[in-house]
Length: 85
Image (cartoon, rainbow, N blue to C red; front, top):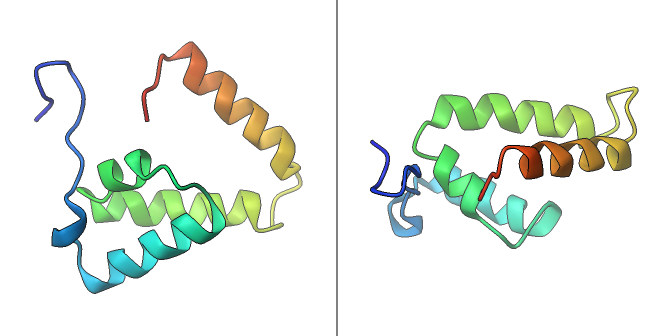
């Protein structure tokens, strides 16, 4: 499943369902112009839906953790794990 560098392949934009294309549009508008994470998770729509719900909870104001603090934690975790997504 992983490529020769140990990375998971991304879904191809042109092969996304209409639903995923709309989600990607919202991703660009509300989150990031970088689509690496989205397109990697789009290969597993169930995982993407679960993650999307969590993101909506954290950044949408439902959580008691401030979005700015969560963003710092997210960046630190990505750095610690040498995450390229």
